[in-house]
Amino acid sequence: MSTIKTRIAPSPTGDPHVGTAYIALFNRCFAHQHGGKFLLRIEDTDQQRSTLKSERGILDALNWLGLTWDEGLGVGGDNGPYRQSERVELYRQHANFLLDKGLAFPCFCSTQRLDELRKAQMAARQTPGYDGHCLSLSQAERKRKMQSGQPYVIRMVVPKQGECHFTDLLRGEVTINWAQVDMQVLMKSDGLPTYHFANVVDDHLMAITHVIRGEEWINSVPKHILLYQYFDWDAPEFCHMPLLRNPDKSKLSKRKNPTSINFYRDMGYLPEAIVNYLGLMGWSMPNGEEKFALSEMASAFDIKRVSLGGPTFDAEKLDWLNGRYLRENLSDEQFALRYLQWANSDDRLGRVAPLIKPRVEKFSDVIGLASQFLDGIVPVDAAQFKHNKLSAEQNIRILQFSLWRLEHLDTWNRDLIEKSLLDLSEQMNLKVRDFLFPLFVSISGSAVSTSVLDSLSILGLDISRARIRHGVEVLGGISKKLAKTLEKEFRAL
Ligand code: GLU
Image (cartoon, rainbow, N blue to C red; front, side, top):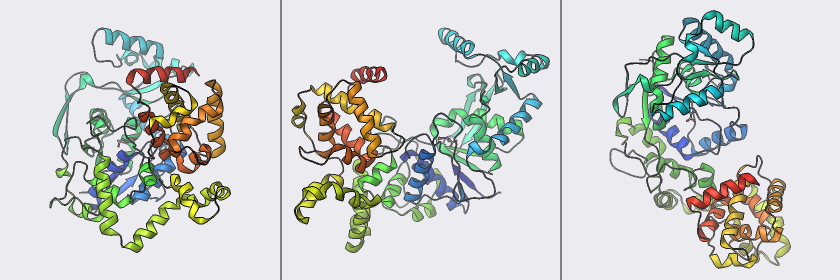
């Protein structure tokens, strides 16, 4: 048997998600338990949404957690490049191979035709999907359309009847009807591959033996298996991990809970405790011990011990475990050292100094003014918001709109924060003072403090977001109905 190789293939389209770390952890343990290798590649073929900033954030977060990889971006290896945007020629060659064999075809259908088709299928209660219209074009017609410069995508041929069977390491045999599988687009009209195509080509070329990923991909397996068959390649083993859930069992999402690894870093959790906690998501040590190191997990790892009931990512349990790490794993000296490292990460104290220096008379005054920069989610109550004479709903609106604006900043610095918030206050027709007030209260938790713009820039997006959200909750929260209204109003600004 060839060397076991697993991979993580994140798309760089947002903050580093705890779900990515969870899947990375299980892939890494599986590979290392078998003496194999763990690879990382970046799936950045969605040009609209992929950013280098997000890619950097994901790599930094995984490294911070100690979930390092043996091959891939930043590490190197024989199968690079490890960024899909740099492999486009390879996908093109593979798509041409399928076209030549008649296993894929160019599709010239317009978006309008596809929209109408979908609508008609929905109205007739059929599974929406491509109807094979361009399959019947003759070679001559295809050539003529291509030469006339008509835009096209490349789709794969998919059988209409029968069933696809495959084995999932956790679920056993899975059966999916081919009728449910769409004639997937492999190459888009912009010449870039889709996820499905690039993913299969890369997993093969990078010699991946086991694909361990989130369960949201299970319905894609038939397309992938078919591609392996078309190329006459051996398919890897598939294993679909249960998704992380909120305590109310809904899918873990940043609407309900912080999901960015950076939030947990900035709150002062230890990376080793977070990794241990992720190891408890659907898995347990054979001896039932809940506290274990990454190396212990890797040596005892057995994928069959993953249970399929949706694992709950519960902040309280993480607190409990992190507390044990602080108490049991760190000497007093180490505790002090790691606290100081955390408190001064990114030169935080250096950046706070010019803000508080003008307002103190002696060092013992410092902690009172600086505490908000070393705090997590600061306590606030509804009465504190009353000062600007705006209604609770209006204050919620300011907080939510500000958050949406801040989340879209490319770079987190004071000037950009200031500009985006001042623009917003103007668009909302509010006096700057009234506008900034609910932000000030939510961020500082107090009536006197340094400028909220400075505070935001030092605290970073993740802690700021959590405090703003807390402010919104204290003011009564956002019902589903209000959320809809707010989204509409925000888009209209
Ligand atoms: N790029 C995909 C993601 O971000 C990878 C899925 C897979 O592992 O196949 O989830």
